[in-house]
Length: 337
Image (cartoon, rainbow, N blue to C red; front, side, top):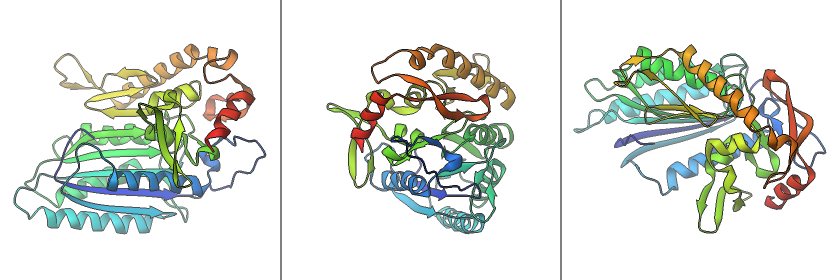
């Protein structure tokens, strides 16, 4: 996050949702879409973020923080906690120097096809409109302060649709009250997200966790330890590389929207005064994805530094793409476990 606030609320949510169907397969890598997610790995994702926000050595830590991690939750439980967060902001706003604060919301689990709504337990959902409305409720509780800074990390299928609707709601409808800081979605609006049991995480969260150092790269902990990772896995682009263009995260950071290794214009013109529509953003992102997919075709037909991607029984969203790693690459993955 690049916008620093002295007051910050962190909410991490994991849910198996109504689509839960445990994935069972003898495949040694077990890579599968989150529509077949194992709650163990979605919980590992939010536990990683919870530890990172509380204990990570990163720029922009706030002197006043509140933290919540909800595991296997439903809408009522989430709404109750968000109300507590709103009350915390309302009370904090009475402190001289209150700066509007920031909210950081992380989710791992299933996403609903079409709009990317977060699939919670007991047949409930939390959609982009719910999220923006929650942010506005928080902002309305602290009148006279600066805009609420909003950050979002969503590791679920179709999460790009959720991100774009949130960005639209902030920039088109509430630009004076909310300001987007860092927004991340694990996949394009029409793509599924993957998780790998050998990594104990959703792939997008794992790639986000990679931090290169002088000895290579370190990742989110699995089984209580830090595991070495490939430098190629670092960040959103690493997710695109590893899946050969099948899963392409989207991010908004410092006024720039990006996905599939390309930037997309949020505003028209040099002065950045004419805001483009969500449909225009999505069209450009999908075009960038299709171009990248063709460019990475070599990874599906020829050996690369990490191994060779071949045709196999793994489906990526509506496009029906089929690919999985070859045996050499699987052995490389197994060494991480």
